[in-house]
Structures are given as C-alpha cells and as structure tokens.
Length: 283
Ligand code: FES
Image 1 (cartoon, rainbow, N blue to C red):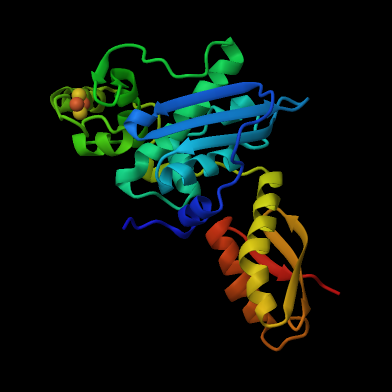
Image 2 (image 1 turned 90 degrees about the vertical axis):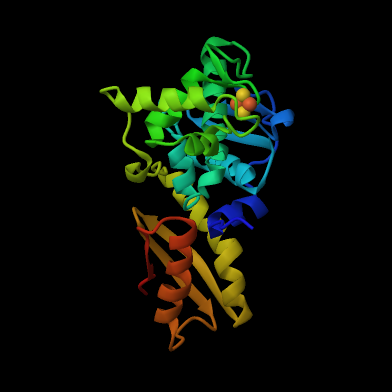
C-alpha cells in the first residue's frame, strides 16, 4: 500500500474536472494504455485568454488520477504564460507530495499541459510525438525528456529517473545510457531550475483559492459540524484570511474557538494551504 497524503486520496476519490471540454481550444494527450498510464487534457480559454474550463480523462493508478485532478485545479484561471511555468514538482507539491516511485504521474501531467499549449499555439496534434533520440524503447522516453527531469528535479540516480519517467523500468537495457545522461547533465554548468527540494508550489489565484475553500468546507468540514447540530458559512476571503460564521449549535458555543482552530483551520491547512488563518465574523 502506497503512503499517499490526504490530498492525494481526496483527489483520487473525488477527482475534480473529469471529462472532455466541449469544443475545446486545446487538447493534450500523453502516455499510452500499453505503458499503463494515459492522460487527455482539454481546455477552453475565456475572452481574457485565461483557462476558463479544463477537464481530464486519465487511465492509471490513484496518483495518476490525483495528479491530473490537481493539475486542472492549478491551471484553472491561469493565462497560458502562467500555465506553461507549472512544473511536475508544482503538481506534487499541490498534493502534499507523492511517493518517489509515483513521481512519473506528476511528470505525465506536466507533459499533457505542454502538449495542450503546443496544440493551441501551433495547431499541431495534441498527441505527444517522440522527438530526438529515444533512450528507453520499452516506455518510449527520449533523451530530451530524461535530461529535463534530471535537471528540473535534481535527480542523481537511474532509479530516480525510472521513478520520474518509467525509463529503465522494463528490460533495463537503457540503464547505462540513462546513467551517462545523468552524469552529463549534472556536470553541465547551468541548471535551468532549482532542485525539487526547494521548488515552490504553484500560486493559486484568488478564484481558485475560494473555490477550494468552498469545496473543502462542503465536503470535509460541514458534515463534521452537522453531526453536532452545527453549521458554518463562508463570509469572506481576504488574502490568506478566511472569515466564517458559525451557526446552529456552534454559535455561541463554549468551544467555538477550538472548533475554528482545531477543526476548520486545521482542515483548510491540509486541503487548501498551510498559510490560511480562520476567524469568526465580528458582529
Ligand atoms: S529499453 Fe528501457 S527499460 Fe527496456
């Protein structure tokens, strides 16, 4: 059994934005059923050229579905320029982390996003085409892909490359070539991005934050309070400040401060952001 975070399990059990956008502006497809994982991403832009509607269809394990769901939540409301800066580490961070052996799911999400953006900009097929030298024939992974994950995620071993791309996870014949690529990339002078350990999570837009807070309250918090005859209402979100009103048995309750901090705030930290503070609406 994999050691998944609560957010991974939540996005697996309640995936957001499943399906295909009708008349999409962009389509990105990566992976194949033969390799065990496949992801189709579709999105539509609004008049301000922000991603207004985005959906996914994924064939794969729990972390593949959770990564796809997280990706759609991350990019909703973004411009294409903002979306193309999203990394696989941003997807993993959004989920509170993924088991190392499952990081290839976050990479698949980032690749589908790139394929969709390329489809929108060039009109070319949204299916990824293997370009350049194919290093791993079992999983169809190119030299450029391996170079990129090594550089972006600060990888140092063949095993890590397998975890991030699946390359090397079949017959193993490509492992020597992967090793050479790792040595070459790590000895080259200009790493393009900070290593994974210092990568920052993608910033949520205010709209995304409010939507995630509302969803979390509906799904995780309200049922808990209702069991004790309580109710909660979201009043406002100001930056990282969440203002709520406690109703029913929770209103004027002796332990309402405990409810706010240990139930509401703690749950929002787990599912939305550890930066949030929650306070009750002043009369
Ligand atoms: S060629 Fe890479 S695992 Fe077989």
